[in-house]
Length: 131
Image 1: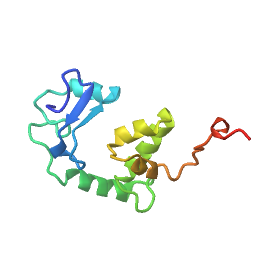
Image 2 (image 1 turned 120 degrees about the vertical axis):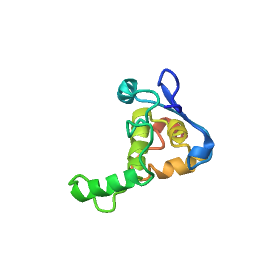
Image 3 (image 1 turned 135 degrees about the horizontal axis):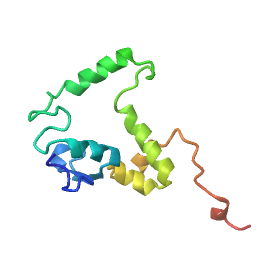
Image 4 (image 1 turned 135 degrees about the vertical axis):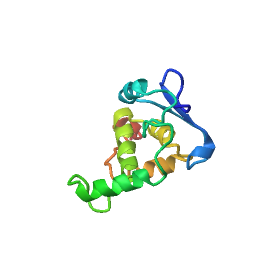
């Protein structure tokens, strides 16, 4: 809980706690805040105890889910949902810059690779030269 702001509006992760090595400040959705408000501040948000689950807990949970689920396609991973989230951010905002910021990419080209499967009209008629 120490990573959340007092009002639970944001979670802050220092650079040594994420892959990019950069500090991250991410907004917390309202439905997550509601669950967090019910939690005692000294307890782990996932385990509900003072100690967190071991580092392989979610890996095992995902493995069991994959075996039982009829929703997933072959070779789908947890990381696949990052791409789904990226596409959703872009569709809702229409902004490559917001997508870049949300994903923590250092270059907009990396953000564009997440959108390669979309048919995005890059140019509009107004962008074209007058002939």
